[in-house]
Each structure stands twice: as structure tokens, then as C-alpha cells.
Image (tube, rainbow, N blue to C red):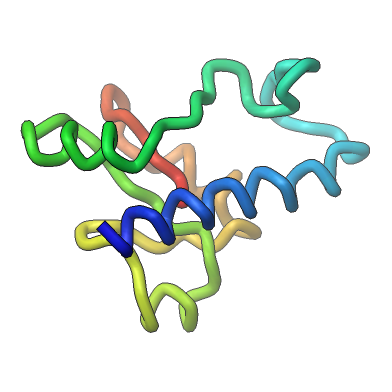
Length: 101
């Protein structure tokens, strides 16, 4: 539970940091109201925990540095540092719900 809460906090932090880069040209459509990628939704940690427990087809992507990932992360998450995310997204399997922390 503590790790999922930390993951949710990391997601919020990543979204906040990405707003600082909003003046750069984006390679994906952005909702002008939320400034998130179109289709992105915030999910409460308890809801995600329930979906994971029910066997949902979910891929958790930790976008922090490899050193931070090694210290603590959500079990089953993979590490793709934020700076490499754009290129690595092309390699991810289709049809899975992607959760970014």
C-alpha cells in the first residue's frame, strides 16, 4: 500500500514536472484543460490495487532514474527513465493499460 501511494505521488510529480516542458513541441495530443496526454486519467491507488489483484492486464512504468527505481518501486514495475520515455513507448505492447509512476 505504501509503495502504491508513493507511486501515485510520483505520478503527480511527473505530471507537474512535465508542465514545465509544455512550451516545447509535443509529439502527442494534449488536453488543453488538464495539460495531460489525451486519454490519460488519474487513478486512485486503491482502484489500481484492486485491478492488479483482479489480474487486470496492466503494465506499470516507473519513470524515475534507475537509482531511485532500485531503492523502491511498485512490485512488477519496469523502469523507463522519463527522458527515454518517448522512444521506448513505441516498443511497449499494445492492448495493456499503462500506469506511469
